[in-house]
Image (tube, rainbow over the protein chains, first blue to last red):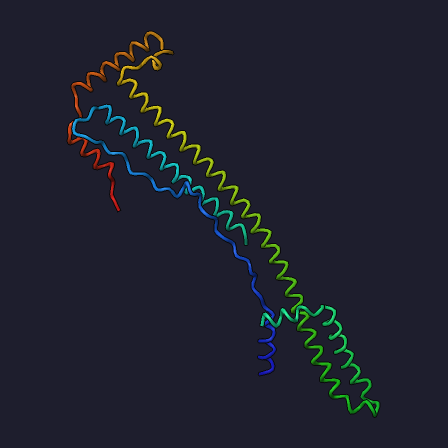
Length: 87
Length: 173
């Protein structure tokens, strides 16, 4: 029995593991940028056009941030697909 | 153990074949030549040595085969990782270009719209109305006058500004 155990341990010494590690890719720096704070209206006497300009600016800031968020989602889905293809 | 295997790996594969062959020959010889009186006294050591040589030979045959299998797997994975890394870099470039281009369009659109508002407010409407028909120009003029009246007569109430600012501030973390 002890000879059998010795032979089994000896046989196990021949086992190896594959020394390859796959790195998850670095994210795109543009996507890591924080979304800016929305523009506030300043002053006490504000014309309706200043209000309008502020609204336009904020809407566009939202779309800009939304694009980055969509980019993140797309990046994650695509990179995960690629990462999982290596097996 | 891996260092020991590495040292052993320096021994050419042919050695293990020879060892296995010698082991088998030694076992066979221990049976066949055992009948000769002079050789008979070496029968047992020859047989034991043969068995040990066969065991070691078979073991290292296994090691060599296993190593070859893993080396093939490593090569296969290395190729896959290289392909994946190239694909990943390419995907990054595509997404980056896409996002940067779209953000540029959004920023450009915001700038154009703010400039348009400023022109209308200042009355600098020549570039805006230059391609309009008479009817469109009259309609635009009417809207411009309406805006001028609103600017003069309807200042935005303070509470509206405060509420808009409150909404714009969001929830700070």
